[in-house]
Amino acid sequence: MRLTTKTALALPGTALLLLAGATGASADEFDMKLTDTMGNKSGSSSTAQLTVEGDSLSIKITGQGFTPNSPHAQHFHGSFSDAKKFTCPDSSADADGDGQVNTEEGLPAYGDIVLSLTTSGDTSPESGLAIDRMPTADAAGNLSYERTIELPAGAGAKLKNLHVVQHGLDANGNDKYDLEALGESSFAKSLGVDGIPEEATNPATCGTVTGASTGEMPQGGVDTGDGTTGGTEAVGAFGLAGAAFAAAGGALLYRRRFATDRA
Amino acid sequence: MSAVESTPRSRRLTASAAAVVVFGLIGIGATGYALSQQVGTPPNAMAPSGGAGHSGHGGAPSPTGSTTGPSSSGSPGAHAGHGGPALADTEYHTPKGPLLERSRPTKVILPTLGVNAPIIDLSLKPDRRMEVPDNGTEAGWFTSSPTPGELGPSIIAAHVTHESKPAVFFELGGMRQGDRIEVEREDGTTATFGVTEVGQYPKAHFPSDKVYGSVDRAALRLITCGGVLDGETGSHVDNIVVYAHLLS
Image 1 (tube, rainbow over the protein chains, first blue to last red):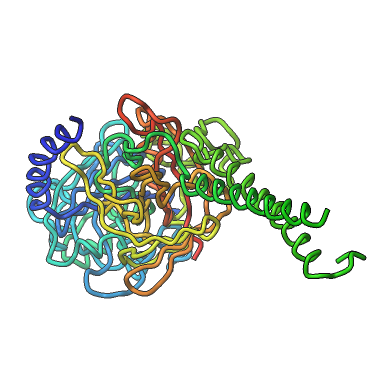
Image 2 (tube, rainbow over the protein chains, first blue to last red):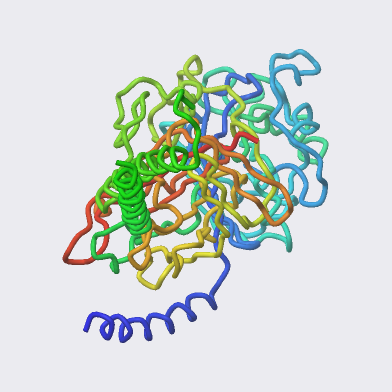
């Protein structure tokens, strides 16, 4: 009775399973912690969740302590082709000793821009300074960002070894980017854009993948006990016990016979 | 031997006496073992010293220090926001412990239990429950989880019983903190894990986040069934989960 029911249920189930299998690729789920490893006194930190399915990336970033009401350029840095080990810079990367690790000083550690995390449109390195399409922190300095991006072929598998850098900080504490604080951005200038405050381009946070979870989370517990047992486990051991007792009995009888003979 | 004169007969008597004792002891031992192995008592997971089981929060800090630093872990707003640079986390966070490249598992070995089982692939069923092996001799790797040795929780499940017989993970609940787990992989390497915790949970209250959720190192979870047998559904009411970290 129960068997029949099971079989009846199993058939459409199998069909569904095949369909589900066809859609295929499993997703990898990663976490990132983005912090001010540079010691740039940005006061900013973020967490990011990444879902990588083949070459499709869904990324969600939540941060706090950012320059309020200001755009924050953010990118994946590193390389999709090199096997080079990238890292986040610490304060020792401050080559000119001005108390800030600027973008140029950080690049040797975290590598070039490979993906611009814009809110819309192009995500190539060319959009690295597209401030009008970068997320803006709210009045309390909170920043949130969410987007699904199609990556260059083969890039999905590389992503977990790369770094995200969020730029823009408020060095003089007046809640905005201004030239008075750190002067003009030499990085922006080198790309042909004049008059951008260095506060707007200096790295505020940096981080890489720190954790991973199971891609698709199964529902509930796992059905690893089957229902066929009537309740007796370790049947073999009971069998052994029986055999051993029988042997003991046999040995006893054998011994008795000898003892009797002798008496 | 004693002073008894060694005749063939006396030797036979002595030997038979020994046989009675030996077989008797084997019988008692095997009965004891068999009794101890009845459903409901495949070794249940005892909370190992150092707090495990349904370990709640608020206990002592985890000895493995899996949460480092002044926490920026997930919970938004945990930090003082803007204007509190003194509190800001400036640590460069990276995964803890060793990591291996991706490679599918081929065999799981539990030296303390004498288990050595081949590994098949398991995926999700249409009802989103995890598939399980259709026999009692193979273990299965959940293909949506990382491979053993990669960052994150790699999931391996196997039956506790199958067709009235003890199956691969029959004694899983008897594993203890510090026990080794070896997983052989397709690339020829062996990932060696150390058990950190053994938990037992009602299936209705399976701690999905703890088992499948994010971890900051290469981890392994072995899952099987345990607890009493539910006469209605004919299956065990609990799951046993062995948590382990990659050692090398």
